[in-house]
Image (tube, rainbow, N blue to C red; front, side, top):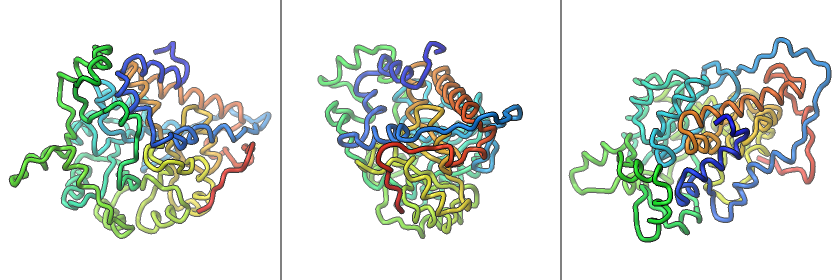
Amino acid sequence: MQNHHNIMDLRRAAVRALPRPIFDYLDGGAEDEIVLRRATSAYDDIELLPQALVDLSASNHQTQIFGRTIPFPLMLAPTGLTRLFHKDAEVAVAEAANKAGLPYCLSTLGTTTMEDFARMTTAPRLFQIYIFKDRGLTEEFISRAQEGGYDGLVLTVDTLVAGKRERDLVNGLSLPPRLNARTFLQFAAKPRWSLPALFGRKFDFVNVAHRVATMSDKQVPLHVYVAGQFDNSITWKDVEWLAARWKGPLAVKGILRAEDARQASECGADTVMISNHGGRQLETAVAPIDQIASVADAVRGRVKIICDGGIRRGSHIAKALALGADACSIGRPYLYGLAGGGAQGVSRALDIMREEYERTMALLGAATPRDLKPSMLKRIGPRAFSGS
């Protein structure tokens, strides 16, 4: 893993490790993938203006999110079906997160139970939650998170319907993956992935499987049950309902408008995650980095701001913080590492991010995250739209 010097090196390792349909599920985005590419390329439109001769002898990169102090401003985003990418799944990611001391968010659609995740996670632990049609299921998750000592909930609000991910359609990918005439050769070419994945532990949504098991009227496939639980009638009143029952740190993930960030604050959230769901939902949605300034101006410090999307370099973290974010969130970068090298690969991804971020801070003349200011940035090319 030490021979992988950047996140794109880890991406190439993931290409080598995964069958094509599985890699495309990890790597792909919605429709023409314009939003996927733009989420990262938007950082290239921002140049850095360093300060000279700044005393950096007392540099400190710690920050606070979800009521916990972390060593530098980064968290690991929730990703569903993590066992698709490595047999050790969330266990491997948690091991790396513990080592780095960084928050890791378990997905509702993860492949490790909330209880097992709580036992294995010593770093700040988060749980990603949905407000389902069955409010009893959502209330159950709240109770389990409280009993497991979770530091915060992350409510995802941008998946009322699934985005059109055309790579998956072309590959004929099914979840969980199954062998058929179309995919046999692709899976057979990667036996180190295929043997444990196809013949080992089932790809279950383990945190909801018991709900289907107790349904007496008819047998419903698990993925059909989960898809049927997404509720397109939820409003900000439901966020108030969730905040009142949880009574702890709550982030709303999927915010791109300043007015929605204000509304999240008024409904009881203490954190907003500016996110376009990794470019997997609404095609040509705005890049998260381009919305930070307007959101920060709208909330004026009342909530924490986490930038989620497109981050591939430590310098991207510094740019997001200079615009007003409190931290950043990554998904694909650590999954590339997981696919290529398990827990060691995830640790390598986090080490790369931290090394690049701290080097950027030093060369910018910033001793702490609070020293990062918009005056250290210069936009090039057409100025991105950043309305409400």
